[in-house]
Image 1: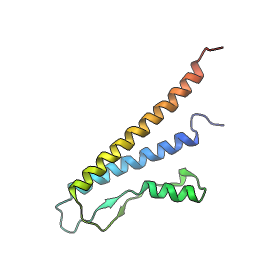
Image 2: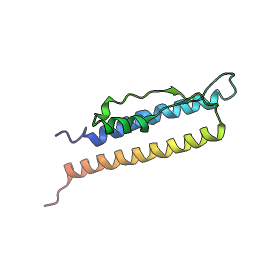
Image 3: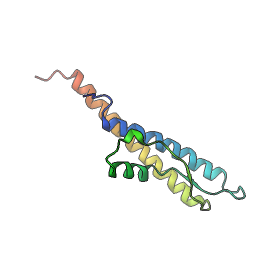
Image 4: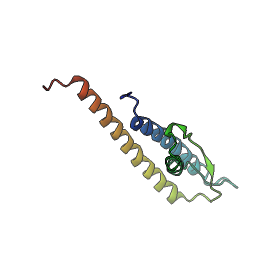
Length: 112
């Protein structure tokens, strides 16, 4: 059993990669809001995760993807997406910190 790279930490690492990509895509959407013919792009991580889990697949098989939604870019929606993604990044960061703090406690604990 590999404690350091458990399924939980691998899932969190996948989530962090996808949320980082989503932040870049959202920034790109905002930057191109006035570009003629530009359509909104998205990173559908939760949807891909749901599909992999329903098939009983490995979360490591998820690759961050960008898709064009075909919708116009609405600034308010992009700002809400940015705030939502930031909260998700903070949640993943806290969860990873907790995971490694627990490992550290397990390694350095001197309780009898």
